[in-house]
Length: 316
Ligand SMILES: O=C[C@H](O)COP(=O)(O)O
Image 1 (cartoon, rainbow, N blue to C red):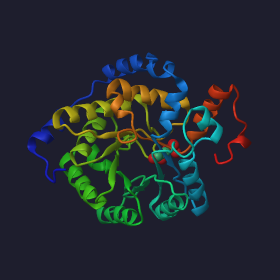
Image 2 (image 1 turned 60 degrees about the vertical axis):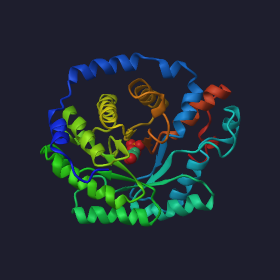
Image 3 (image 1 turned 90 degrees about the vertical axis):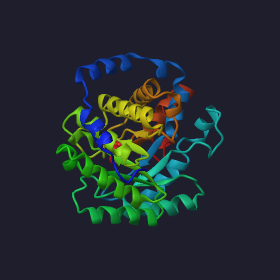
Image 4 (image 1 turned 30 degrees about the horizontal axis):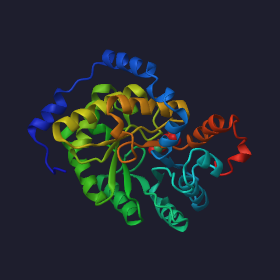
């Protein structure tokens, strides 16, 4: 991570423009590509589970629902489905559990109790709006890290992005990166509030320059969350950044991802735009609070020929 940004870097950001029509065309191609869907549907779905940040971000979160989330993260599928997939019990887990800072301790202890080696991710910095002082936003990161969060999902300051104050945005993000310490930083752009795709691309570059380990689309609380055109623009920024610097930054779409079909579209995007090596939990996460059920239902249908009844998915 650099703690300064050069004039050339900022020129690169300001010179970048996104052609909306070209994005539309490429998305049409991607969505008609059946690579991921046809090539072993069940194994793609099973593979997607290890990339899920299993999330609860509700006002009524409490120790018991966080404990349930931890169990689901450690044992995302019923034992006969894992057996049918040829996976040993306990070998398939989600990528992380994601909670509010006040619930990090519950998640950390919940995972420890069941001996699950799964990182706790915490949203921070005044999630979802980020509308508080920088000092409070930094303190919140430190609080989450002290309580055991290994991944911090920060929100960027949308005002700075909308006003094209890229250097100021960079400076804030560097402070956040420092506050994260050894924990990974995932920068949420809140794309639905960035007005246009050019701003999404520019904010992606700045977040990566400041040392983000991942760039993430949305909080799930904006009116527009993760969409494939926005994802394409962010993947292209990741690709450009990698070509220029050699660093591989991960991608996390989040917000409104609910179905197996959604997941396969996101995996298609990753495979086609960034390549197979990005389809691992180190470089790809899907932030979702209500997706796993649908994956489990579809896997059951594929593997047993029948959909599960709701009472057969007790932890869902
Ligand atoms: O960071 C994750 C998002 O909040 C999840 O959004 P979702 O509740 O729409 O799945």
